[in-house]
Length: 319
Length: 255
Ligand SMILES: Nc1ncnc2c1ncn2[C@@H]1O[C@H](COP(=O)(O)OP(=O)(O)OP(=O)(O)O)[C@@H](O)[C@H]1O
Ligand SMILES: [Mg+2]
Image 1 (cartoon, each protein chain N blue to C red):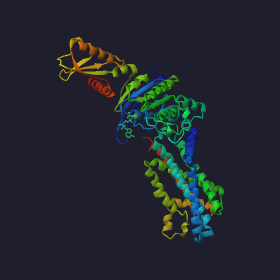
Image 2 (tube, rainbow over the protein chains, first blue to last red):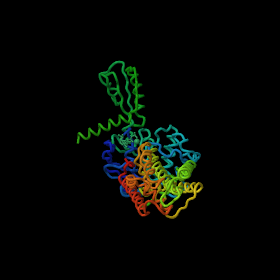
Image 3 (cartoon, protein in one colour):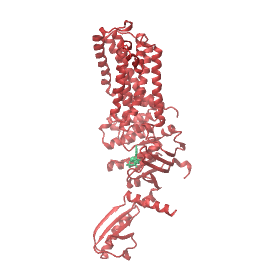
């Protein structure tokens, strides 16, 4: 990656909260200009802490952050003017009107009033009709849009979205994805956090997986999806088997429960897993291997973290 | 980017608008308080009070009343102004914006002080309807009011940052400011106090504030104006120092 392409460069970032919780451990992360980067991790992984370290809510206890090629601790004012943030929680003066809050944000970031720009932002988020409504009267999803409108009012080049689709229905979620796409078209670099693999898959160019304050891996979406998009199927067999029949060895299978349960674990995020399970079920029937139960599930983030952590530990022991 | 003046103005404007969302109540309450105090203390009790220098009690308590409102309103408006975004979480935006100490102070403290100035005008107007009084040094009086409004808005700002519950937000004004104000010669001259109470009063900063303001109104007070002015400015500088420290360390602002 050429240095000029790096818009955000985080090195050795540590954060230990006053209470002693170690929220980030030696985090290294480079974000490229113009990309959409998804930070994927379970509750408490440190996603919000990482964003807060860049955006000013959190004081890191170690490491360095460069944004737009400048040291954040020195040039923070110039940098912040070009960075936007939509936090995880809905937080604003609920009694204020939509349009006033958006104007306020623009001013706070040091930009001159620009009604055309405010109108454009509100229209793009379908908030124009609600511009004179008091925010507390809006639904949750609309409130979230106001948060986004506020963050876009100063035309940031780097935008952080902390769980943009939490608590948002399917339609609004799709709408949000379209918004994010439109921003990318305009050249905005976007870093979003999410719990959902599908969301990372839908949106991101690259994905970083974080757990317990550590970045476990950063890779292109497709390679990650291949690792993440696994499907598992448990066939409960009528009669236990001693070993996986030779005719089935082309599938990733093994036996559990003293041969009473045939377990499939495979797929690559393209739907291959589901297809293979359907094929496998038919073949079992053809071969007269009767099963009394079938359970399938897609691998959850937790499974993946367990996998990744085990991988990492294995690597460490090898070294 | 050195100073984000637009940002400071945006915060200031937002705060002023927020405070005047309840404009009617904000203006009405000092009008009522002033009228009641003036009628009860000024008209009813005042006729039996003897004051040094033969000053009318009515004109004596106008600066005291003004000070009472300035202190309570400046402190509570500024403390509430910065406490609310902490409470709602909206503080994230201030922290993520290119605004530093100066912009934040101009915004929050400036707005609270501006409101106090407007209230001061309302009080003086109300008082003029009820009693006759004169202001000996109007220009000095204006600057003194400004100084006191700014100082106590700074104090309120510190309280608002320090408070992490509504209870704490109320406790300082109630437990410290109110007693200090009432015991600070707001409604009497400390020269009428017997010792040791007169000497004890001298450690109360409000005594100097009230006397400073009173001097600009009446041309005389318990202390020379230089002493009062010095004490007020010292108090202002202490508040600024504390705030500078808060922003430097991020105390109660950043995790
Ligand atoms: N202000 C705080 N003081 C102390 N500990 C904190 C604070 N904020 C977060 N933590 C702790 O730091 C860890 C990381 O929290 P963080 O909010 O960054 O996680 P997250 O990945 O954003 O989680 P979620 O998906 O639930 O939003 C957690 O263990 C959390 O309890
Ligand atoms: Mg979070």
